[in-house]
Every structure is written in C-alpha cells, then in structure tokens.
Length: 235
Image: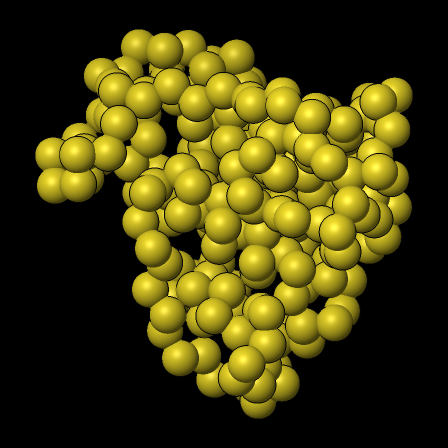
C-alpha cells in the first residue's frame, strides 16, 4: 500500500471537504467542451472520447496529423512536454516563460523545444540526467504522476495533497509515491484495478487525454491567485 507523505490527510474525501471550505482565490469554473473533435480514429465508444474532445477544443492537441489522434500510441516525453505546456497556458492564461534547459538532446527548432524549456522553467522536469531529457522515450504511469503533481504546484502555487492509496504496487520508497497519492486525491486516477496502479506501464495518448481533461476539470475556483485576475483581467 502506498502512503503519500506530503500532508497528513487520511483520505481524499477529507481533502475534497477542505477544498470546498476554502476561500476561492480566482472566480473561475472550468468545464469540459464536448464539441466533437474532427479526429477520425477516435471512436464514440472510446473511454477517452470526451477527454480527447476536451483537449482538442482547448488546443492542447491538434492530433498527430490532420484528422488523426493516434490514441493507442504511447506518449513520448516530447509530446508530454507539449501537452503540459498547453494545458498550463490554457488554465492560467499566461504564456509560459522559455528557460534555457541544459539538455543536449533537445535541439532548437523542434516542436518540443520551447515546451521542454517551459516545463523545465516550471520545475515540472529536471530531465533524465543532468544534460538529457530523452524526448523520444515513452512516459510511464509513474513518471506521468510525477509530472502532473509538479504541474499542480505550478498552476495552484501550493503542494498537491497527499493521501493514502490502495495500490499495492506503489512502494512508498519510489519517487512517484507521493505523486500517485496526489492523482488519487484529485480523482485523476482510480488505478488499473482496485489495488493496482501499474506505475511501470507506458501511458497511451488516450490515457494522457483522460489525465489532462480530469486535471483541467479538477481546477475550480481555487486556481492560482486573485492577484493574477486583477493584473490580467482573466476570468
């Protein structure tokens, strides 16, 4: 059983109640846009159909080519960087700063060059090594949990809650243990079964859409700061 250690809450229901009792910081309500995306390879019966529609309408994705989303393909770290940059900008109405990363394997001029610089600046990633990002590597579910946990901090400007999860395959010693507790607290995941999270499995583009759409939906009136609304007029 994994115990996320960041905050001594006992269940996600406790954290949800705390959030409901908080003073809203930004009077914004986020909801899905279910307008059908013009993607021919996303079946109406797919579990991720509405999530893919959501991130398409948010301009988080345009697909892998015109009319194609490739839902069963694994998400690469380069694609993940692009997705997270766009969801951050969509939720905050702020263009992400480009901070030069130290990664030798991220050349200028690639679709992921600026997104990698963005998430490096947001401290969503530190790379796979001091000078590597590994943009073509697939993303595991454990890594995805860590990315979304850090993205929560970048958007909300506070730590993601830590709760106990029922997942026997998430060791408390692993780097993603707290992060899986974060996703579980936010209702971003219920695992691959009642007691498993499968942290070493790769994330498909369909699953990524579901994670991102739920992350977007999980951001109610407690988004980042009222200061931002006052400065930018963003509502």
